[in-house]
Image (cartoon, rainbow, N blue to C red; front, side):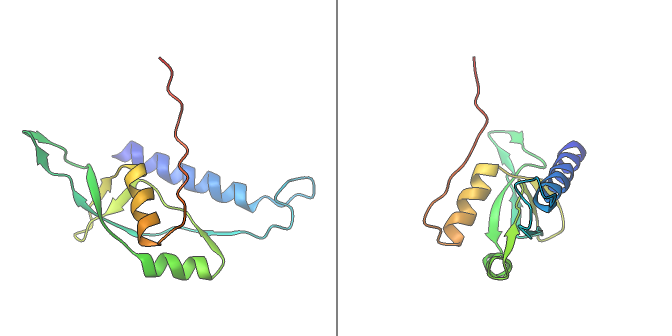
Length: 121
């Protein structure tokens, strides 16, 4: 879990830096984009399935729809990750596809576009 947290934190920082670029020769010149992230996804443990304890793997329990909508209506880009927080404060690794789908449904989105790595055999 420490590696996942570190990776997600590093990706947040890198994405925020990319949205902050403002050199006159960059595509982001004068874009003035604001980015936020937070605990918008409440998780629950996946539990024990067929005798396997999935420990820190979780499932989406709830999406903080009102808070996300508030940020979006304020002109923010909301960054979400595959990490969810439980009601008791644990952090769970969630399926990124599940988070994206649940957020799209909760926000009543017209479309959901997901980019995934291409796997070759």
